Image (cartoon, rainbow, N blue to C red):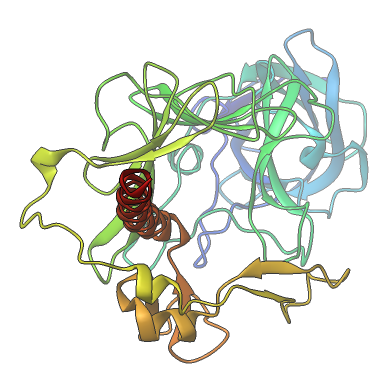
Length: 389
């Protein structure tokens, strides 16, 4: 059969991808053509030899297969390229990087059913409905198909830029049940960003520092904000059930401000000294403290050790027993009646030592008043003795 063949490819040698009921992407693709001899006569119900080569833009063969195919009574040639039934194959379709460069398909046929092939031409691959569909992900109310794989561990999807591996999403670094998103093992300089309007809002850098409002955190956890807005630019620890919480905010002067909806106190940026809110304008029902010296005299400082496991060295402490203080100054004792924060005991008690210093000053003032009275009496007695001389 030395006659030239005239192959009329269906849809100009386009690759017709078959759809399956499960919507999984097929391993290969269908090729269909009508085979006629040079006189235009159909080559019907006859074995023909077929060689198909997938090649890159430089005409380098990426995958080749050869097979014998029986044409239909209408002269139709049907081949599922890459289905594993070819007589011989070279390369693998699964190893082709379809997105790296342009690819094309070269078709050769031997009408005698052998391997004396005639080159029937080369056509570039074009996108078809299935390929266009696979360019995105299907989403439904129950999650859609998403990205799927048969592996039970180390299942991940890589990201490349100019053929350079940047990172991945999937299950790799942790447990099989975990989800990772970040840079790959060979990317030691890249950071991971959570962005809004393409602007990084949260960053994890290459050494594990976390930044909010900065792409270049210098500390393990850094929050950057503008000056002047307490609520919007600090760190908030909130109790959503009670609709309350506390904020930490770094001021323009360098102080660390703490509070709820505003400044309730601050640590000095140089000395670290803490000062609490004490402005007269923030107070009401202001009254003088009644005498306290007799009560102070009943307080008994103690030495003690804590039972907690962290006190391995049995360190001695000096202070008061909350129950004893409560009997005298209940306003200095806090009682955790709700047992919040994993309290060690029910109704756990604590002492406000800072406020007790005010009572100490009051007691000193009372003592000084007594001293002044005694000094006055001594002076009077001395004067009496001097007059008697």
